[in-house]
Length: 195
Image (tube, rainbow, N blue to C red; front, side):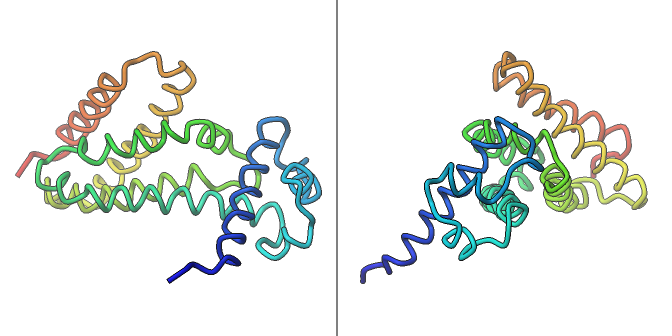
């Protein structure tokens, strides 16, 4: 069964528009980017743009949602092993590889702007997936302490990644993973005894 060529064209158009937006975001502030800028960069007409998106903010939010959806799929594929082994490393390694492959995109989105919710959405994704791990490994009795730990870890992991990028990934990947694991372990151990 052959795929609908219209679907393939639509996917290609959406991909090209997202790439064009990212290219423009390297050069100027998001608030200064118009639909015309994006379509000119993509060598596409505005009518094609409006078939897919309502404006540049919608395009940016769609790009972020796609990235987070791919990340969630990776987490889903490795969360069982993570749960069983009692360490975040099985899920952290593939997620780190994913982010490194998309480093340029992530760096642009980490900068933040008035239309972007990427860092907060990433924080929520880490928090949502981390909560069941803490429940399983520590059986905490105090929800407030659990919330503090999750906030500390989510912002800590994001900060660690941003700093690693800022330092041109000078720290070897294995050392970064070990550092992230040690930080998570020591923070959790300080609040909750292992069951």
